[in-house]
Image (cartoon, rainbow, N blue to C red):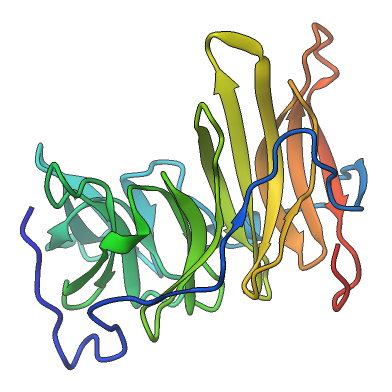
Length: 278
């Protein structure tokens, strides 16, 4: 996949070699104590911010993402390429090579997964939605998941080796945590709080040769480096997590039960008041 050079005019704020800051902490194992939070049953009034604005959540189709107005970022061709489609005007234009496009909420940028080479697969890239100029973040590692902050200034990411966020203006990579799970863990459902200061992630750990090694828990990350596990529920899945507001997170629980009433129940995590660590 061709790497495009960065236009000095279009991407003056993105530096060529992102710096890694903050000392990363290790993700704790399943026996560690979780944060002190309150969890209650959800009500009909507990709607998520992404349900009110689809640009604040991951698209249902990872290769057909909504943008502002009638715009969409669509992946076409066998060698994945991203096109910006105007569904109202009926036009489309080539943007760059890549897959899993995500529009920033302000519509200026599109984050994507780019294949550079066999030595550098699954590289996180940020493209200018107007010009198609791309900045690749090779030092992040093999990307698994990413999400835009509501103010479009930050991009949270989870890679094969660590989890953190990127300051879009400076291009600085902030590594918050690394995951030393012996059998590997999958991160998904990254989503920012409305204040763009914290984001959550869903960590799934499973080992096919040992049924006892299984857990899906929610984690909270602060841009200043604080890391906190919100749930500790072995053999229970926390699915579809998302923010209601700055203090409340809703998720669905897939409990290990034959009772359909217990499967798919919704719960809300209530965090501590702002200014106090959960």
